Length: 391
Image (cartoon, rainbow, N blue to C red; front, top):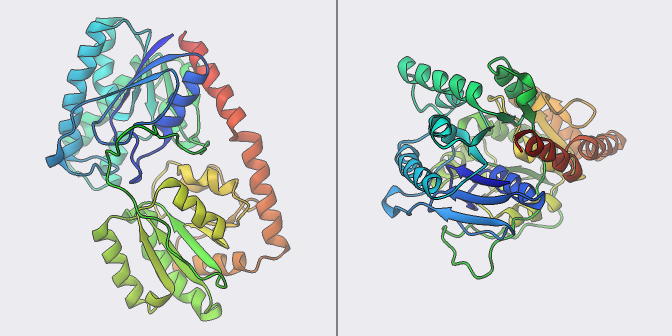
């Protein structure tokens, strides 16, 4: 089977690019697909046997590509469309695997070039416009909603990444049998090409941390929905009982880090907070291994974060907020579920810091859940069923 993957993102970028394209492509190639992967110019080349990476030109004046909708991404997607047409005109592909908004133009190219279409739906794009505060225009949101519905109906297979998104998609698919729930649940190290020049700006190394203090770790983007506005006040409450605790916050663009440094100062915990900036994947894992408690203080959003699966498998207690993005996967048995407000979050962190029998039960249950439903073998089985459906 010859597959064209169209991925509108920096591939692969250490600045927080979602990992799902890499793992989808890696496993599909391992299962026998011959793949051309078309993506943005920004990013680092990775080593995936059976995959040819094709990049549109890099435009330095565009600057770093952030997660979520943006005007620079719209410009790059127009260029991506032109490259997609050129590849389809020169090559015969059995399947086009379109990630996110790439499906909006691949859907219209499908009857022209006669390929089968996979829509890899990482999120509802109309919802993204609202969540990232890109636009409140009813006309624009309505246009995206119509494009999304049309793409769901036209696709030969639809992948969603969490149960809530699956419900949203299945309601609009003519044949629910064409839907595949494939969570972004594997996290093995990305294999960068040793001979490839570094295209993306280098990320920072992990900081030196004291070995005698319990570390409460947040790792992720610093977008408003991630809940750092409640995490820092919660940590101020934690410090009243555990003055030895240290909060490490990994991620964030410089302006975002500055904003939360100021909030830490206002809460009186600046001296107990370490802001690392964006780190490479392995550097974050080093911090995870050092942590006493992991946190996911999200306040909004419906899609389960990729990091939740790695946190389940980590052997470290997780404190997560009781929001749909988490409760589709998490429950009281596998983590410390708390309300998305400072007092409840602080109580959960303090409970996790105790390291008692309850913590040990939670950690064991979390690992068992991961092994049963989200492991590498489970992921491969889901991808095999997808490829068989479109072969």
